[in-house]
Image (cartoon, rainbow, N blue to C red; front, side, top):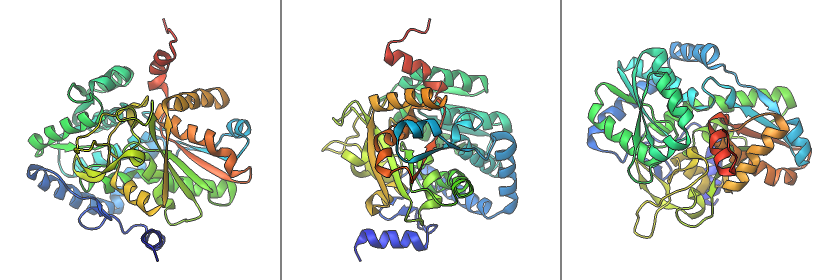
Length: 412
């Protein structure tokens, strides 16, 4: 049996066996972090494992999901889009209908409840598209935490609406002018802050990346997406989908959808990265297409780096996908072949954004538009008797100004 076959067989038998006790998914993951943060990571893992096995914790979290977040989110049959594309029956998992407008709130609620257990007084976070920042600011307001959110200055410009939302919620947005002025640099600054304030502060990392146990924690909170999807599609269609599709930045919405289906080998899993302007260095964020294995911000995974190991600049029309690394669990499933990855360029994502607006009356986030674009490209390959589920991870209100700017459409 080849290595890929062994991995798939292991997934089929024990989908919950990863990461191992050291935080590795095969060769990926781990804790590559300063000594000053190691004790905080040990405490966080211990508190998470105790909470995750505590029925009272789940009851409280599920109550907040229901009454504050608005879960369960619908699984919506996109009839008009299905008819237009002339292929698979397309369903949208409507994470855009969550309070705050994206899947990010699933994770911030869970981590805020952990922070309360650890008696932390302050939350910090990083954000790219701003949705994780808004979700963190929201739970900070809900539970009475002081809150600071780090955001690259380029993302502050293109996501100014979300900056204002965070300010309204009582959070201070700290603009980062170093490096590429995007998500990578915001994470670096948040890590630096945490290393100096760890006794009073919890870092609410927003994606399935970073040092262990963050990939485990974020995947666990976000897997509510896939668990709901599984129940909903069985009710609607009487069977599991033929394919599941999600955009891939760090990996939170993708792992959230995919994780409960890993053992169902008849369900194909497709991750869609940001192809940007082109696949030349600095023009994209397609880590699996041109990246190499390395270590960044606490984790071993696929990175965009040059021949000397220096991190390359990235670009995407979508701030949330504009990042030079990918989550270690996704790297593991890439190598095993369980998840297939490809990329969608800026123009395809913009066209998908406009198509979903006009066919279904839904404004998708530019991140989610990459997954919609993949469906536009491939739906006919599946045929009308097949079922395709797309994670609509966020809504596009935040992106309207940027789309108008890129299309040259004046709004005043």
